[in-house]
Image 1 (tube, rainbow, N blue to C red):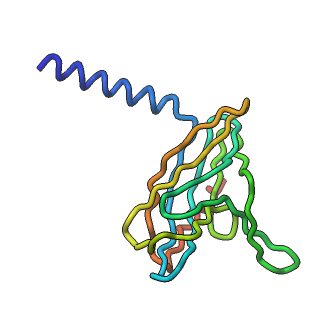
Image 2: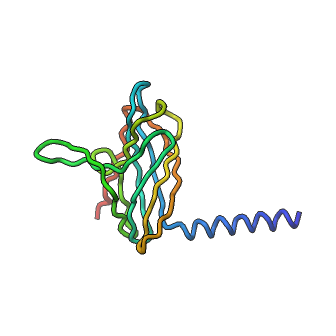
Length: 154
């Protein structure tokens, strides 16, 4: 019994160390469900780095994944691939519909509401060190709209 308790405490200490060393946190990750024949979808999330960093890549086994940005140009909405997304230290960056997002293309299968799909985010710290962040992304309905966050009143 004593060995079991020691092993459990050691495991807890290891988890705390991993959490304490985590430089990047991801919240509210979701992807839009698709109809059976669709070959593309978007994934959205909130990402925050403890230090200045950049999101420089993304991959998923469900298809090709790229970082994209939607923007207004000449009264038209356009979408384009971006090489990186800046992650200022301590500031949450939203990847959301209508802005930066993960584009999933060439889907190998339908994304169905209620399942999760894996994403691997590649974050580059100052000095060029790259870390991979594994994320399980919840698939939401085609009509899903994330809750709007309103700033606190002062």
